[in-house]
Image (cartoon, rainbow, N blue to C red; front, side, top):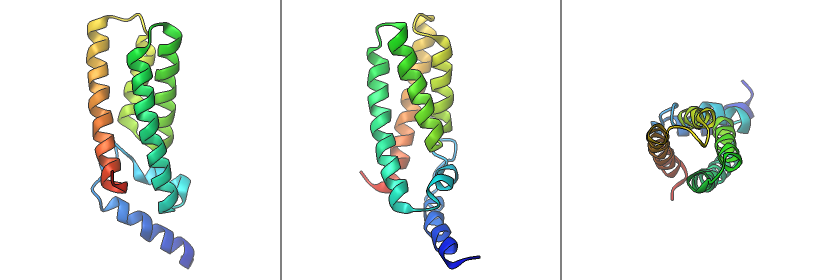
Length: 130
């Protein structure tokens, strides 16, 4: 194996040892895009954390179907890109439910999403700090 690739994998393996749940945050998936570059991973995780907060707020304030669709679709996309599979699945579920869905069901799924986001933010904090 080339020394450069070995060094990159070594950096990445430190993340894996942090006991991050791949359903919450799949660092192997992220590592495929960053080739194990820790600085790039940390920057992407910071940006993702900002997007989580932004899209969650937009979703909470969505007053019509278009705002709802935009927030759920965006959240689904950024979660898939980074490897936050549970968030992506829940965002997709919310996208399919739509803005005008049963409010009790919507509340349950939103609560699940809040828990997943909190878990993901804890994992990010574990990796990059606060």
